[in-house]
Amino acid sequence: MLNIVVLVSGGGTNLQALIDAQADGRLTGGRICAVVSSREGAYALERAKKAGIPAFTLPRRQFDTAESFCCALDALLEPLNPSLLVHAGFLCILDEAFCRKYENRMLNVHPSLIPAFCGQGMYGLRVHEAALRYGVKVTGATVHFVTAEPDGGPIVLQKAVNVLPGDTPETLQRRVMEQCEHQILPRAVSLFCQGRLAVHGRDVTIS
Image 1: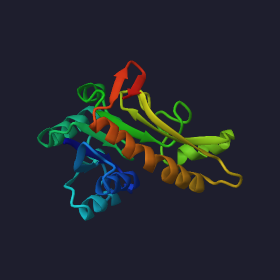
Image 2: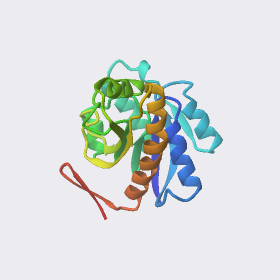
Image 3: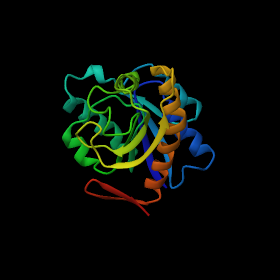
């Protein structure tokens, strides 16, 4: 049984999807052993508490650099012995040394079909605003391995939904969350924990 640590910064809807998947047996081969928030008062911490999962807060704003934050995060994680870090609405950019240490052991969910509408500064409603401005007919979500390049790691799973007439950033965000993110993130985590993912350069194969 692999130890999973979920990194969060906000409301924690994707954390809740993982908690629910664990509760109903869809998350196999691993267990969520801790949640770490980069923001004090994030509602994700309440979700962890309700599920009986240990939760920690490491405020990003207390650190001057990404390097100092990553050193503190690494020290916090060490005794937890995580096999997998899951970025579930985690808004911090991690430095290259940290990404190297956890290479192919960090998964992130992003609310677009990468490589569209991704990269530094593209998160939350900004992604859906950009999709609507561009006039795309289809959007979705991507689970990928984390590298030092924001949203640039090898892709594990993607799922698409149609953009509907009259969509707002808020309605599109909700559809992408419910129909894409909340489905593919638990599946990708389970596949990792079952040892079914293999990374070959940019290609991820599922056995």
